[in-house]
Length: 231
Image (tube, rainbow, N blue to C red):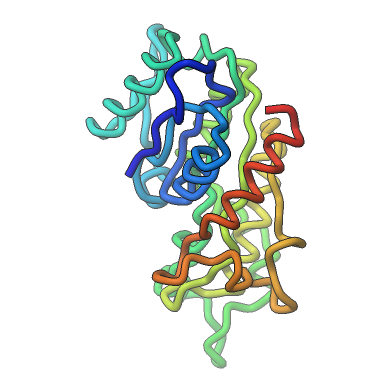
C-alpha cells in the first residue's frame, strides 16, 4: 500500500515514510498536486521493535519488501542514502499507539476493577515499558537526528479500536510524543481540531470502513499543516 510521487516533472517537496497511517497523507498530497515521494512501508507493528540496520553505506530495512520500496523512493529522489536527503522527512514510524495499547499486553497490571491504574500509567516502569516496546522506532529517529534531517511526525488519528485500552493509548502516546520531541522531530499535532470532548477522533475525520485510520479530510489537514510549515 504505497503512494508514489504525484508528478515526475516537479521536484518532490518531502519524503513520506511510515505505516498505514501515512496513506491518507499521501492521498491528500496527491489530490492537492503536492509533489512528494514515498508512502506506507508496512503496518504499525512492523516499526516498533528493531526493524533496520545501519553500516557505512547507510540504512537497511530488515524486511525485503520494505527495503525494496525504500530504495525505490531514494532512487526516485536521486540520493544514494538517507544521509543525502535534501528535503524534509515526514514519518509516522512508532506512532501507532493503538498497537502499543493492545489490551491483553496490560492484563498483568490491571486492578480488581479491570482498569490499569493511573498511578501505574504515570510510573517510571510504564514509561520504560513503552520505550522498550518502540525501541526500533526511537532508534530510527535517533539515526535521522544524527544525520541532521528535518523530521516531521504527524500524530495518528485519535482512534482506539476495541482491541486496545484507551487509558493505555493516551498515556503511551504522551510518552511517545515526548521521546520524539527530545529527538528533534516536529510534531504535527491536530488533536484540538479533529477530536471531540472525549479526546477521540470525530467521524468527519475518520475512515468509515475501519476502526483505526483517518480519512482524506484528515489527510488534507495534515498536508495543510505541512504547507504552513514550509514544505
